[in-house]
Amino acid sequence: MLKVVKKSKLYEGQHNAFTDLLFGQQKFYLAFRNGANHLSYDGKILLTRSPDGKDWSEPQIIINTPTDDRDPKLYFFKEKLFCTIQTRWAEGAEHHRRLPMVSYTSDGKTWSTPAQCFEKDYVPWRPKETRGLLYNTFYRYHREDPALWQVVLAKSWDGLRWEYVSTIYQGDCANETELHFRKDGTMMAVVRRQNKTSVLASAPFPYSKWNYQDLGFCVHAPCLKMVNGKLLLAGREYTPSGAGVSLWAFDGKSFVKELEIEEIAQQDCSYCGLEQLPDNCCLLSYYKGTGSDASIWLAILEDS
Image 1 (cartoon, one colour):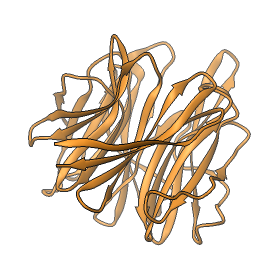
Image 2: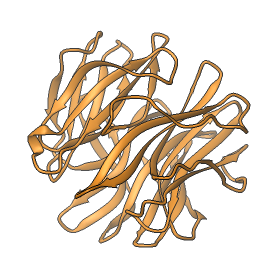
Image 3: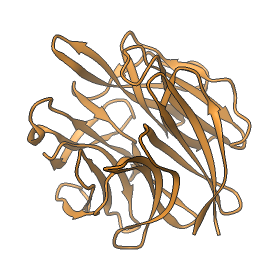
């Protein structure tokens, strides 16, 4: 079972949230949004690096458009480090117009100008690679009609431009959706449904026909990662009493709760990143806090 070895605050000041964590090229990379508050339009993306997951560099601004940049997701592909985001702005009475964008670096220092990578008003999540291609989910919300929300699957040959593959889920205010590839090639997708339990969707290649299983619990901002041979699901556990940061392990059929990292409370939290460490340990990034006071946290977990 997993246990918390250590928790530490990494970065504070203003509203810091929506983390992602990636290991590659012998470094850990941690990205997050920094803004005046949760819904301010001044959000920008910061990136910090570490050789060991313990000592971190001063955060560098890597994306800062005139609109609200948020939900960074990091991935390596063809010797480049990419960061995909949604950027958000108000347009008339609509306060949540969105554009999916991507930026990349070839040298780890200079980042390209962020560019649109998919259709307007779709939000990208965390890309995963298989068969020499990248796959990712994009969700579209609708302010008035939950039936018009949808999650789609897209693929990319270059990490920059994405092509529609199939619709994973339609309706029920479906949004943030995390992918994982099983050894037999089956694609798994954990789908967040607003104010409902989450769904585990699955499809064989070419990922066009989907089957569904109700998970029986609600997880926001899902993150899936293989750690020490276990498939772990990290995210915001949401109940009528509030929200906390929890971990579940896949038992071959469903996800079983293993650990509560931050107890259920009236707080904003989660948007985790997860990476393997030596000695049966793993590193978890997340945020917690409300209003204009939210901080980035790291937890070291041990599988005993």
